[in-house]
Image (cartoon, rainbow, N blue to C red; front, side):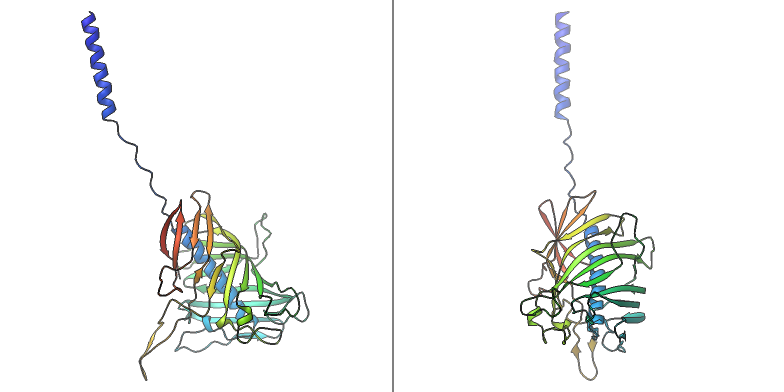
Length: 330
């Protein structure tokens, strides 16, 4: 009987040993490499800041070079009602100088806290932006004037933050606050939607070196401007991912209107072959924090990956200390 018991014990130990040897290792965790939501939020911000840039041209009664018709087309002239509003209308499917296709109208209606504020650059200037059937690259953009009950963000508005009526451009940089709520719907697939809700500060970092220097009598030379953005906005991506996007003042987003990644928009063969520089100007530097409820936080770095062309539309997204190179949407 003892021999039988001993034999059974040996068999049990052997079986346990064999079981432990055949134990499968736990699968390695899958790396979080979902970039689409961060890239989509960045694209929504490009659309929003482009609208402000257009408002900047309108607010200066200036020719909207970047957003006008591409070379070869008929130039569009803004409509200005002195002291009341300015607007810009693109016929259907207009190919613009920045390579984008636009339709519809953007209107800037003036509201002043200072009676002498006549331009976007002036102390006391406030511009309320309205979008009428505005479509850019297949996205219908609507300025929301009806807010959720828990949202106090006003309609899309630009407010000049000048500290005085005539600041010295040598010592004071021109600055505005952009705030509001934009809805973006894909025309081809209306189930795809994006939102941009928040506030950004916009600063011309090279205010003192613009030609001519802006003042209450001279307009802003936008083609020479280097613009910085900091602040925060929230929204939802086309993948229905709620997000928060934050940019600090230490590494603001930078858009330099003197450089572009697209060397050639088209080729002219008559009377001679020549290149046409594109007027597309992406963010070329700056770092943003991108967070969602379900994913690890991301750091979006807009410093280009092309050492030869620092004005490229690429950068990186860092997740858990791992950096991934990405191309942003135009």
